[in-house]
Length: 345
Ligand code: SF4
Image (cartoon, rainbow, N blue to C red; front, side, top):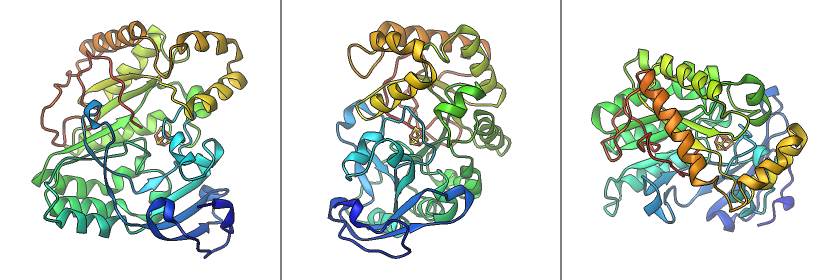
């Protein structure tokens, strides 16, 4: 499907959406400050529970993603590449051309009821953020959570969105009948860095407020400390400030994850780096010379430092493979002592 064939800005234009396996597309814009410049492509998906390709590397096998593209606009977002599969731009297009699977709740309910479904764990927020700004308007997650609750199907959510608190009651209800894991992603607490590298996401302090609020309601929440950005958020004082803030917020665990730069994200990030921190470009080219990941020695060093700080501030390490009821980490539930290369929000 060619997206330029859609009349962007029109209220109701339709086109074949074969590429999504969807039935129809409606392209919509909203003239409100929070959605200015953003185009929503509403589709009726044919399937909503997806198997993770190469799931052996992941702590989960099944995902649900009601959106594609993300207005949180993190420069380093690994999911940028997936927009190219839709013939959409992986840079600004990823931030502003949002695909919305408007039938996600009903479809999930049907798929969970299928005799073929075995009730496995479902991870959400593993590709793009299910609590990005669009969710405030489309309200897909309440129906999704209600379906998971009604089928007592275990699940986890990873998010940077404060909107998750809107669904607190549903999360609590689900946690009474199944394993629920919630993790918030906070890689650093530096506000200046946040404004340029995660320009559409809530501020780190607001995300930590989510952790605090969940804890106050008896719902445990882990923090995926991701990404730790080499030379920009990896100083000893910066790591300490971040882990201290995470601990103070009442997180049940902290899992560090060093920046990785896959194709799609790499070009966008490096162009941002050239504009904002040109003196670091050569150092990055050396650090990521072998590919998408920083060297193992670097990852181990960061993990060790965060692990030590976590112990110092009294955040318990996580045991991999433990059941993920609310109160324990979600998809990022790897032990803090292990370098991890999960592809998460
Ligand atoms: S990293 Fe997560 S929150 Fe940021 S743009 Fe990507 S999907 Fe959205």
